[in-house]
Length: 125
Image (tube, rainbow, N blue to C red; front, side):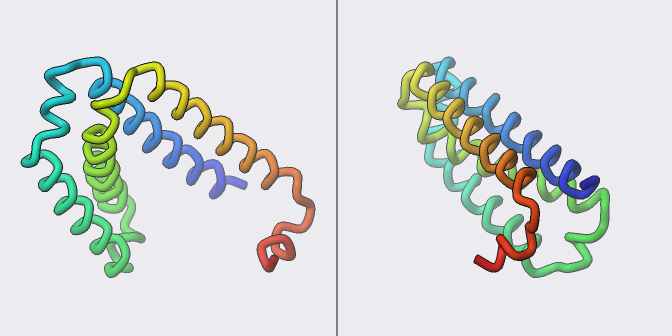
């Protein structure tokens, strides 16, 4: 259960960071223009791909505690700026509603995971 809490804490931090960047891009016109610029989007895509490849290919990087958090932060930041480039054109209310629906779905999935008595057999399908 400790591992699940740690993973959920990391995912919650990633979602919170992405939420802050997305809402900032949706509310602020200047920050939204920055996120939609070609330079920001290309840089975000390149950084995203390199960090994803580094996490997937390097087992040592995934298992070294300070470095995997740093690479996850870089991965999350690049993904947040890519999503912010898309959501900068949307209204803040629609962004808030979609983030709320995502939070509700993830909470229900986690609740269902906690309720299932035999998790190994349920994972087999």
